[in-house]
Length: 356
Image (cartoon, rainbow, N blue to C red):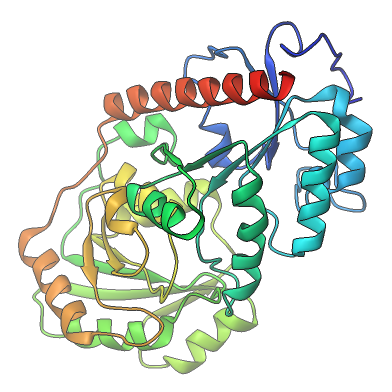
């Protein structure tokens, strides 16, 4: 049994449905809760310690192990899987599903990624989804496009729940810092498998060249892949550094007029949500479902082509129009209240079915 949690019947601990989120500490999962602290009858459990890992690290998630489910089945009602199954085989995930069924516990899956941004080959993630999606008692996803893909591939209906705010509310409400010129930024981070930063940076440099007051800034993490980006772009302004803290990230994004996503495949983006919270325009690839999340500009980019002409046109449009797309703090608050209520209803529904 989980520490500090007692079993009180199908309704959960003190009448609340107990959710084992994978992971619990991720900012997305934290923002599924009501902003005023109303629990809607939901108790989200903390991430269990990871053996041998420093405090606060949730990966690899113990909750995905069938042995954890068997040992702690009296301490939770629903396993809600978001992330963290990148390295799990279909057989391991099938064993997890069996353990949940044997324990009478429900499985909820939010399909954030139809294509894993860390995997060059789609096969492993397809196989994982091939186990989790059919087995889930309820499915959620972030956009109607992703829900349509889920229906096409597996014949399952997914409830569409938008991504909550990524930036703290006080930052969303803060005015953007005044500045001159037009700053285009592309952050390669640690160059995930879905990122193709060098050719995108080259295309951006050509697009920015000649635009009055326009500058291009490239950032990358101080690791081998990030440093390789800098080595490949010696003539551009490339800044290699440790990953930003949250506050540093918000300051960086707020300083940009246009943030460019260098992805060649993907599904959804928390980075785009943060930009929308801060009022920074985004230029996203036309793969995935980024444009359904928030207003943004698009350019042609996928695994087969980089359309430099569409990228140039989008940069010129952003420079000329200076789109001021920004999340409204009050609307984000109402959205989060609705997100919390929808999740609570899903949890009650699957718990009732599992008990029956």
